[in-house]
Length: 445
Image 1 (cartoon, one colour):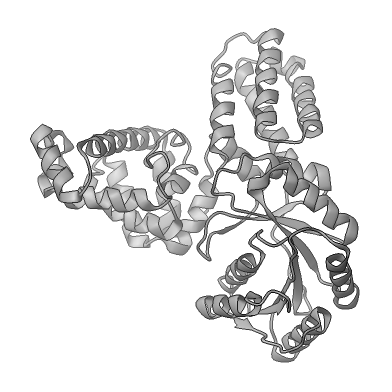
Image 2: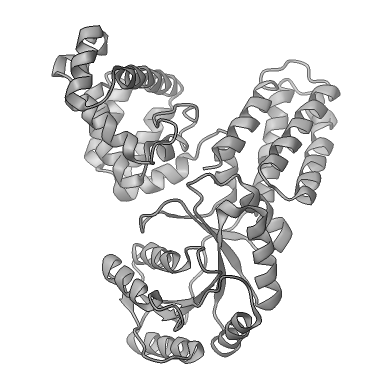
């Protein structure tokens, strides 16, 4: 997620870290590079200008220039400003004390609105809420059946009305939710290929009659500034309360994410991070700022791990990390755990210091790298898994044949595994890995 921007910013700030004396020219040069990186990421130029000037003003203050670690102070300022740019502090969406809470989703066709409705439903179902999905799109032939299929898949009720008027469909859904004690109603409204007055009139009618607690725009995060323009158009027509950006696991450059709050005044509430129904994250600006700057996102990793990891296995791994006995066999065991979260790349992006570990080949489908790693390790003997140093040229050829891979892939895995061990050893010496895995195993953040 936003890997290209993250890599560029990390390269810029690497020059500042550890600098004993920081001159104004160095700060100005770094900020010129930051400005260029953000513009290349398709961030709104006005947003970039304000962002860079705010950092410049704070970075040239006496407390920074006279500090013992001015480079680190500048990076701290960038982190704070980036978190603010992304929306500042926000808690989870409060649900109404008088159920049901009503969410209305709006957006253009192709943004992933219907799938996102299902993802939100699953998100709240996992929090113990009773959710009702309402397909208020009578125009697209497959819209209602698609949501019905999603509802069956995730075990959430869908109100299958035969009405043809979107407002009537929405009203009946809300009425049912009140009668049957649902906590949350998610209304999936009709989309269009482009914004038009008929669409906006329908949305206005539903808003005026039902008074949704949240009106959320679902926008494609991969189309950059175009998403921001779409958000502005919807915001002028209806009372948006927040935005959901989809397809953020792909090649999204960051323009929409980094511009949305400043340009529209509305926060990003959720981000879609994959095709699976559980690939939806509540958006925390401070955590995203940390991930973009290569500081990891241990809190989100722990939260996901608490839900999906085998806690006994996590404690075993914690002990092996502490005793420096983490082997390829342990690595293979963890792959089955990682599969529950997503790709290895996603997990590594949340661990401080691991952002440069590339376990996925260029162009490889996310998640496939885990299957390849499993196949390679399965083709090793137990001795080889416990002591990778035994794996010489002939053994590598045998493992490659057995796993259906190449010697180059074996070399790559062994190199990356040693990097992972080195990173874990470093974290262990600082106490970071032990704290991480103890938090996972004991269910604490």
